[in-house]
Length: 279
Image (cartoon, rainbow, N blue to C red; front, side):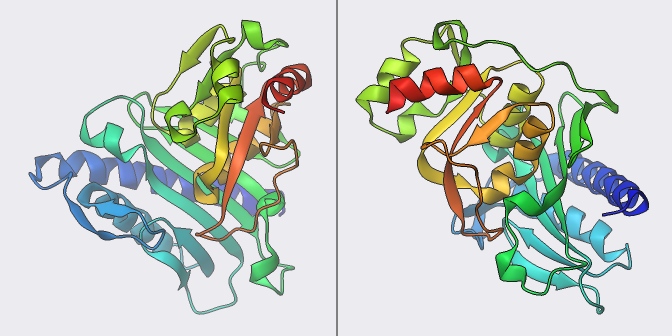
């Protein structure tokens, strides 16, 4: 993806984010905002606030006059535009829905973009093909972004150096421990310095990237690719480590139903130390 195209789609990501945030703010007057309206394409319940967010994102994309493939939480996979798709856009229009409906200040948008210019088979596109990652925490206004092989930024400035923690005993860890019953996981969690759970995977992965967290862990193969497609690039572009539970590089296909386990750490040494607890 050339520099002009990267700049264009980063600008579009900002436009999407602004329109979604406005739609969410405007929707606050709707008394049915937190009601479940259907089961989304990803198989999880869709709340009315999710529909407001997704519709606002699609509105921006339809006005770009560009052809693309969109994969989004509620609507699934759709084609926008009449020409050959030039990008694949992976969208979570509202990550942290429960937080958003309860006005807890950790929810936002996640956008990941892969170039399709030289791609003949969409089914073969993987996480490794993501070239742009964009995450915004709406309540704080913080914007995290990354371009493959060009580094990561926070609020348009070079992101803080990632944490240099190397030992589990010194680490601040985010892990949704209630999702898995594991003696080894319990041992790890009781050995860390601090535990944190905020309720937005995309944003919490970015906390690893900017040093607020030292590690993020979900050992069950239940993390949707849609939730981490952007933030995994942001971590790696700030020299962090992202693998699955077994230490393998993430290579999942960019499909709505694709899921993985995940271990994201600030240093290779911390990753190795966590692996020693879990295996």
